[in-house]
Image (cartoon, rainbow, N blue to C red; front, side, top):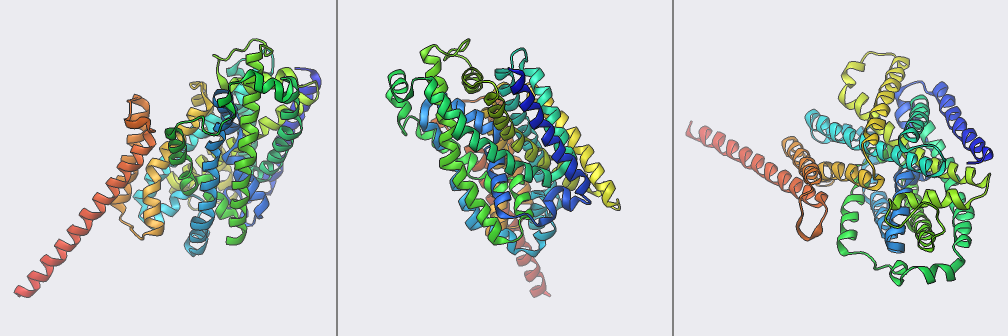
Length: 486
C-alpha cells in the first residue's frame, strides 16, 4: 500500500480514537455510557442501527455471497428489512409505552421485569455469549480486509491491530461515541461504495459486456438460491430485531416512540435494497475479475470473502485506496463497537450488577470501561480461532434467537409470564442450536439448527407453562375440597 493510503488510514483511525476520548470526558454515569442519556435523534439512531446490523461482517459476508451466487445473495438482507419494519410497528410501541422500561439499560432487564431474576440471569448469559461471538466476527472481518489489502500483514497481525483500535475507542466513549461515529462511518461507507468502489470495479472488468461474457446467467437471477437458504436466513435474521441487545439499547436511547419508529424504518431501507445490492454487486465484480484471470494470486476456489478486499487493493489508485479501506474499516468498527457495548452492558448490569451498587457515577463508568476492555480481549482471542466471518456471525445470531425469541414474545405480547417456562425455553432452545451446530449433525430438509432450536424452545415453554397451570388448578381444587369438607 502506498504511503498516502497508509497516511489516510492512520488519520482515520486516530480520528475514531479522538471521538472516543471526547465522549469519555462527557460521560458522567452509566446512563450516558450505555444508553446515551436517552436523548438521541432518529437519524443518528437509524444510521447507527443499520451500521451495527450490516456493518463489516455483512459487508464482507455479502461480498462472499455475491462472489459465490450473484445477486440472489441480496435476499439475505431483505430479511433485515422485514425484521426492522416488524419491530418498528410491533415491538417499539410496546417497549416505549411501558414506563418500567424507561430506567432499563439492557434486554435481560426486560426479561427480569417480565419473569424473574433467574430468567434475567439466563438471558444475560445468552446475550453475553452471543455478542462476544458477534464482536469476534467483526474483528475477523476487519482483519480479513487488512490482510487482503496491506502487503506483508498476515491475518493474525491484522486481527491484533483491529482489536486494539475497536476496543480502545469503545472503552473510552461508550454508546454516545458508538452512535455518533456510526453515523459518520456509515456515510463514509455508502459514499465510498457508490462513488468509488463499484464504478472503478465495473470499469476494471470491462463494463457490462465484460461481466455478461464472463459469468453464467444464474449470477444475474434472483432465484439462484434454494428455499432453505431463504428460510434459514429468515429464521435467523428477522427474530434478532426482537431480541438484539444492541437494538434495545437504541430503543432506550431514542427520545420517544415516533423517533424510534422512524429510525427503524430508515434502517430497513438502508439494509435492503441499498446495502444488499452494493455488497453483492462488489462481490460479483470480484468474481468476474477472478474468472477473467486479472486478479493476481486469487482463484475461484479460495475463500470468497477475501475476493472483495483483494479486488479493491488491486484496482484502486493511491489515495483512493486509503479512502475506500477507511470506509470498509468504518463498517467493521460500527458493528464491533456496538456488540462490544452490548456484551459489556450484559456483564456489568445483569451479571455482576449487584457488586456495583453504592458506587459513585465515576466509579461505575470506570468499572464499565474495565469490563469492556476485558471482553474486547476475549473477542480477539475467539476471532483468532475462526476463519469465516459470515458463519461466526450467523452462529452468534442463531444462539441468541433460539434461546430468547419465544419467551420475550410470550411475555411481551401474550402476557404468559411463567418464570420456569421462560428459563426452560431459553436453556433448551440455546442448547439445541449450539449442540446441533457444534456436532454438525445432518438435519431434515437442510434446515438450519436454529429452526429446531426455536421449535424446541416453543415446545418447552408451552409444556412447562401448561404443567404449571395444571398444578395451580389442582392445588386450588384441593384447597376448595378441603374447605368444603370442614
